[in-house]
Amino acid sequence: MAHSQQTAPFDYVIFGATGDLTMRKLLPALYNQLRIGHVPEEARIIGTARSSLSRDEYIIRAREALETFLPEQHKNAELIERFLKKVHYVTLDGTKSDHNWDDLKAVLDQSPADRIRVFYYSTAPQLFEAISENLHRFGFITPQSRVVLEKPIGTDSASAKAINDGVSRFFDEKQIFRIDHYLGKETVQDIIALRFANPIFNAIWSAEHIQSIQITAAETVGVEGRAAYYDTSGALRDMIQNHLLQVLSLCAMEAPADLEADTVRDAKVNVLKALRPIPEDKVASETVRAQYIKGEMKGKPVPGYLEELGEDSHTETYAAMRAYIDTPRWKGVPFYIRTAKRSTKKVSEVIVTFRKSASSLFGSSAASNRLVIRLQPDEGFGLALNIKNPSAAGFDLQHGSMSGKFAPADGSLIPDSYERLMLDAVRGYPALFIRRDEVEAAWAWVEPTLKTWAANKVPMAHYAAGSYGPEEARHFIATTGDSWHEDMAD
Ligand SMILES: NC(=O)C1=CN([C@@H]2O[C@H](COP(=O)(O)OP(=O)(O)OC[C@H]3O[C@@H](n4cnc5c(N)ncnc54)[C@H](OP(=O)(O)O)[C@@H]3O)[C@@H](O)[C@H]2O)C=CC1
Ligand SMILES: O=C1O[C@H](COP(=O)(O)O)[C@@H](O)[C@H](O)[C@H]1O
Image 1 (tube, rainbow, N blue to C red):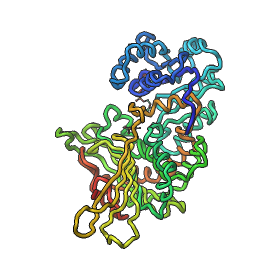
Image 2: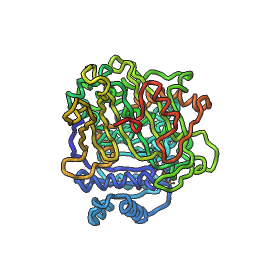
Image 3: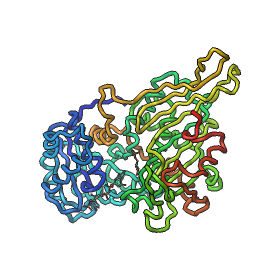
Image 4: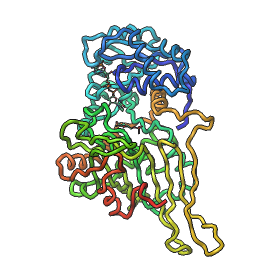
């Protein structure tokens, strides 16, 4: 995925510029890229939303957002002012053809006609087609334009197809950049580095040596201010269909011939298409869904999901699935995928458990080697090994480990995923964005589970807020002879 850090001048047009995502992630990401010299002097950021605001009023909000969401060590008053000079605002309802499109045109016309334009849709996906149609109607889509689509791309296969079809009426697939912010995480890209730059792993990365792979994304937060969205989504749609299946495909893909965008995406989509379907009559044994009930976190009582929501709901805040990939490399290897809100701790990690040694030298005392890829926080890796217990008597084994950090060599902070992704869209570099066929293959795999859960054919388990998850998830993983990482001996 090597490519130049040089970025040509651009106009970034953000639809949804007053929203949470823009304030918390997008503006800080662009600021930080300016700070490290990747944003050229001519670049501009043009926020749009329906809220009637002057440019000055919007800049006040943008300044507040930077003050609130930038890490202290990145704040620099002079740079913030330099960044804000690039920021413009147009009051615009992107779905209405009779709104202030002339105002947007007046701002964009200040740049040369061949200036790179990135339209970032940080709004509800139901608006994507209408906004695209208006951009087309008023002649804003140039050959140098791209569009970035925020998640969720649909709630099932049919709605994902409708969104993709809607945007594709006006943009070529090459111009469409579907965000999955997990792909922008440096540590997720480390999966590629660990696997393919290290022959010691590459050589043993198959069913012959690997017993199972666990992929976890656990969060301590609940649904915060996003209950209206989350309750129509749930853990499976919110995290597994997109982020965790992307992580799985990076863990399982065949070696790509090169790191070009479509070579890597071809390799990933082949994994998604090889996922063994989970038919409706297997959903109860191959998945677990659960909701948190009241519990305790950091010594304080925490309400349950239904209490937070204030009404009844069948939406899961925890999901676990067992996946098999029907390729020779992964024959019979279970991949366990799980995600949770209100878990004991925030952790995203991949655990690769290797098969036990075939040697009879140490009997059953040799434990499985285990590779832990810690995506966040404490980004790094660990390798659990068997070593000799130093004692004069006998030859006993004990657990040893090797570990390392994924930190940048210069001691700086790991960049936020949006930094990389927002500028890759400017560069027209789509490797870390999801191609249409990937989105649709992922929906196709999760859909029978979604339907079976929606029909309430699988009981909803419960777990206390502040715990690792429901007891049912322990039984579920034990049926294939494994246990979750937090329950493992080492
Ligand atoms: N917030 C987050 O952490 C994450 C968000 N996302 C996704 O990003 C998108 C935005 O999320 P978020 O910022 O949280 O949402 P918000 O509800 O906070 O913001 C929505 C934005 O869209 C604008 N908007 C709504 N309707 C229109 C319209 N017709 N024309 C132009 N602008 C419009 C709103 O402004 P106004 O009302 O003034 O028009 C507002 O700026 C969603 O798709 C969400 O799923 C994805 C991952 C994480
Ligand atoms: O996309 C989403 O991701 C976040 C978790 O992201 P992370 O980078 O903190 O792991 C999750 O909280 C949110 O519900 C989901 O929509």
